[in-house]
Image (cartoon, rainbow, N blue to C red; front, side, top):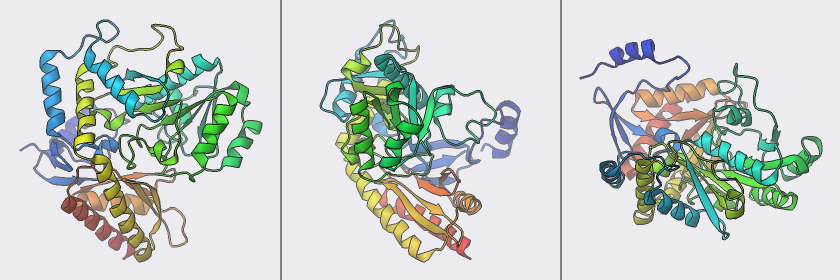
Length: 414
């Protein structure tokens, strides 16, 4: 049996401090919603690799697809020698992405890379430079996406200067949003508005029902490309394939990553044909974009959604979480409000006066880990407990995880 202390000692010698981990669970194997560490201890996974494992760990259909493709070939570079597994995946994504217009899809490697390419395409198409994001946003850790992200520490602190021409608008207030284009940036200089339909790292915040439609209309009227960042909220997490569908909005471009390929590095920009086609040949791409093994895994993910009714399961999980968290608000003074939609849910941890209590949130997450449940803390103030369990989680596993969390809340109350 491997000793965790020995791995931790080696890690401290060879992995930089900046690449930190939230737990000391060194994984040996994972299946469905259960992770087993190198010493045989099992954990219920309420983190899902930060929204990556919506179809669960080591799903047999994903594993089979990866094996089958790996036996054929693992890389040729799509820019050199293309292959049908990527072309067919693009076709499927274009069909499921919201919007009745013709679409095209670009494959890259990570969520941040998808966001950067979406901005590149919008700037090329509009011949404008300005990029508008929102208070509370998170879009990645690369230089442009770091500038687009709200929270300074740990994401931006010490890494300046930041990329220019990024502007931050109020989130959730339609009038304040339109007023921003009087005081913040001229619409005629704005290439894109980039928004998370449900904010992820910012605290699982869903806007009012009329906010996204009004933002989309403003963008259309002003010739601004409307980009939905669905990297965390997409792929069924909200009960719809894409969270923007909850608001009846058809974005010009949509970024997809995380659960698209069940843990393999793959992301995409999907959007209007005329916008996607505006860039000259060779202006988009990358050595590993549309990796064939990752594309094969993504096909399996889409098959699983269709064959195992994962959107319905997300809705059922969401109802369970909403009811449970609602009961906790009545029972515990530390629980402030419920956040999110569908199975993308969270709740705030607060002091008695209602102000954020990040220390208590950390204590609760630590209690959960010590008792066999992996959970995540997020939010600008660090006081939101978010849950991103695989949508294939079994009922008894879900209930056991919630029971552990409730016991932790009881401990905070005591």
